[in-house]
Length: 288
Image (cartoon, rainbow, N blue to C red; front, side, top):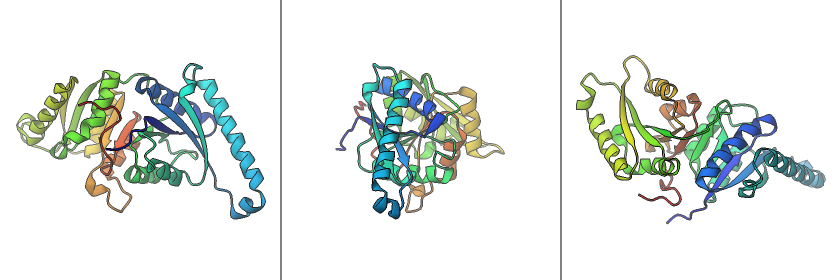
């Protein structure tokens, strides 16, 4: 049985980019009741600086810790600040995130996906998702989530299993949200006669038995790519959260998560919660 940390790790960029990240972390902390660890990652000092300017590097770390604390206290209400802890690390952002994710200390990681100079680029974020020891919630600073009353799960219905829906069940119960299972298929037959529809209906019944409102939507691809059809649907219904699980075949020693998942992660302004196929699928305090 996996140790449950009840903690969220959040990568906080410097400057104004930090404000929307802090607000989103505060939003999820309030309902989930978890402790949030705010991380800022500084450039690794050179070997010369480590030897001859060790005191300066230490002072920089102390200064950044205080800056992070001061900023958080300006954004987060006094009655919630006790749920936030601060960490400063030196090194490459991707390496630090991977190392922390594999320690088992965090239920999931929140970070900005807008590909700025202070965030991971697209390739680095894909690599993190494929290798991380924790689920990744990628958010956009351009879109602030104020409620999660609708959760969208894009799936390959033919491969969907009960395990893929456990995190969705957890969030749906916490936020009293309904779930839409959506799949884009290239079929010429009537959709309700397809295997995709029948499998989706079985998943729907499983969620209904857990007391969760659920519906199924099967979209015809026609001339478009599947991810483009799904992204159009996301923009149309504007859910509070998108949850997607990567496929096993995309998570070998290579760092790719597959074009479909990557396109959803980077193309959606809505927060995308991604669980790779290596992870234990069960969130903390999950009840079937």
